Length: 278
Image 1 (cartoon, one colour):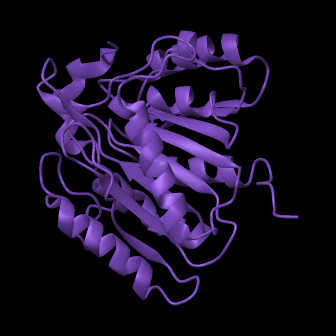
Image 2: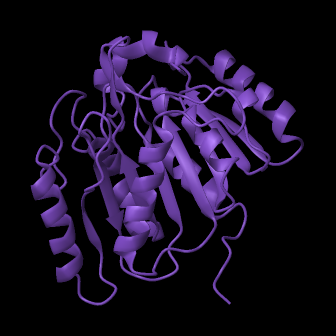
């Protein structure tokens, strides 16, 4: 089994989802986070998810809790703005967090830049004593969390009713969720890019595809300091080749930083055109 190496940083998990300069956004790790639906009741999550879809006028925005459950009976959250041919972001939270909290940190950008988000929940790992991710260590050898991530993607694609673009997607992970993003993007042709935020990567697990890559952290991050993140990016480049791979250091700690998220979205949507429908 593949156990994430970064479990030692769980002590800082409570602040990982605090978007700097936007303290009203994510809840602290371990606190139930609501996106307008209940994540603790499977029947309620499924019912409200379908209700949101049914009530959405035409191609209007919908959001809620996912009905797909993982090994720990957790699901995740999604947001689909109004419009069509929407690029999709798969967002993987850090250790001790949940998808709803990460989605709240990103939703304002999704509304402004018109992209959809699916944010799965991780399962509980007894060895870590926390909710976090198993990570693949070899090419083509998915982790035990991969099926849940895939199922949540397909659920959101279905909920969108044909409004999700077929390609140009990005996989993004924060801290403990970061290592899973490159694996996903290098094995699935629908992804054009990946983002590793305050985290690491396992290049031996990268697939045959060469999407654009983003690595970032805070200049005062005690868990993922700048030198460590730069090293992770150098290791990734040896596998990905000479394609675009950005490294950015921001003023802050291990928390997500407003300028960091703005830069990531610019890198994804503006640095290279997202394919359009014919």
